[in-house]
Image (tube, rainbow, N blue to C red):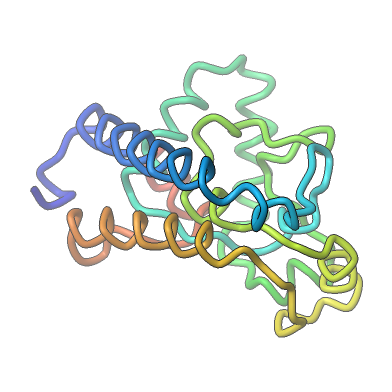
Length: 181
């Protein structure tokens, strides 16, 4: 069903279903890949990757917009200001100016439970490399990743985007603003 004919509720439900299925697949993988995954250095409070641009589908953006609608006016307004400030700013500029994701609050993702596929897939086997990427604003800086995690969530995002049709994907901040209408 193309995005244009789907309601907000249908888009949110589709995002939730897709995110749940991908997480279940990754959980099954994780049971068999514990030794390889032990190299991942991502921990709570690490925010280096929260300064790069993130692509999302309209379904993911709609789910996040629905979550924002349920927040206090004060929180929602603060996030809206951040979304407007960051929307369309390229990764290089975000890194150079150290502009964090508007959903980052006190070194923690405020939408962690419903974070986009791109965020779920991002990981690092070298926290120092992530720090250097942010400090040098070098998008090409090599950050070693656990590829199965990256590829599983990227594949899930691509499948969802294909299901939604052309024009149903874009940069996180711009897409959430669009979903908020």
